[in-house]
Length: 100
Image (cartoon, rainbow, N blue to C red; front, side, top):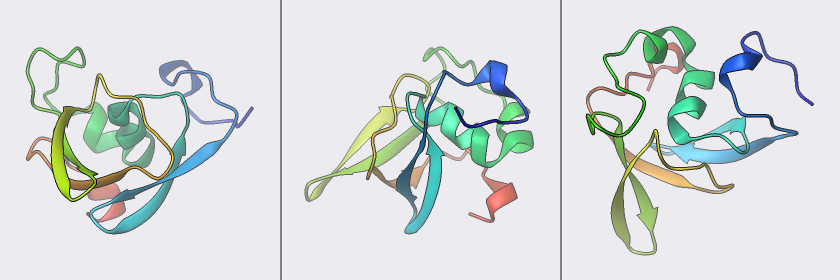
């Protein structure tokens, strides 16, 4: 198991998977929601964001590439998949710590 500085907030995972966010490749923990993966990448800005974490506010919506189309999903309810490509983020998702 990979060690993190905040292991209690992440679902258990054995490895990191690659996803693409706005054209850049990142490694994030498998078995977690996209929102937790964003938190893994940018702990402070996501932890302090005004998000409900349960899908009611819809503020964590992102758009993933689905073939030739974009599909909107709620990141707090969508599990990460290896190779997932996120092409658009809601304004509430601030990944400032990784300069996106």
